[in-house]
Length: 257
Image 1 (spheres, rainbow, N blue to C red):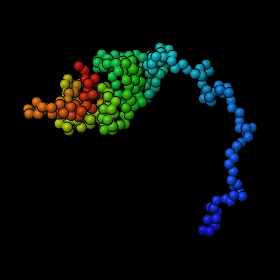
Image 2: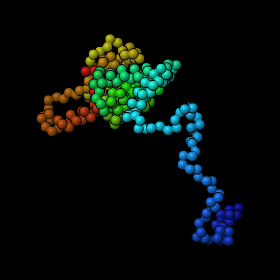
Image 3: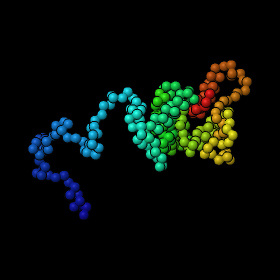
């Protein structure tokens, strides 16, 4: 058995595979002729409705939101999105995104070029938040709603978002980011308390006292020490800001002033 396998694995003799420097070629007639450029339409065009153009002009709009707003104008009465048996028309999308854009600029004082994180699942609030952010001149940063608190913290730090649009179901992850900051001996307190827990949270929530506040502030207190008058003060202050950055960057634009 071993001998037969050995023989079968030997390289064929030169009689079977003669040595040659010639390249193997195929006759030209064996290959199908090439179609002239543009002579054959892509197969997906067959599924296009009648009257649909085969190509688009990518330079016809100055920006993405300009194209979306034009769609809202042209198809105002038509449905744009549908989710959980609820439907939103293009006209409603235009109206709601305009209101959200005004909220971002007027209420949260967001400036053009600021980054807004959107941590939402597939729901009608997402297109409103996206188009609203674009209309306000902001940079939209999509964040996976399934991120863990640690991943959320790193994402917010990396993208530099100063505002986050988050579904109440995922707000507990933001709470955990706050909890990590508090472990570093940074105090987080609120102001403008609501009369009860916000919608979606039970009255006996362990952090209901914090959730009731309309705004949050983080600070750190140091005793009077000699280092306060030295260069070491700078290092401690910088360390404080770096530790509190995930919370501070989120609060900067979310807390109404």
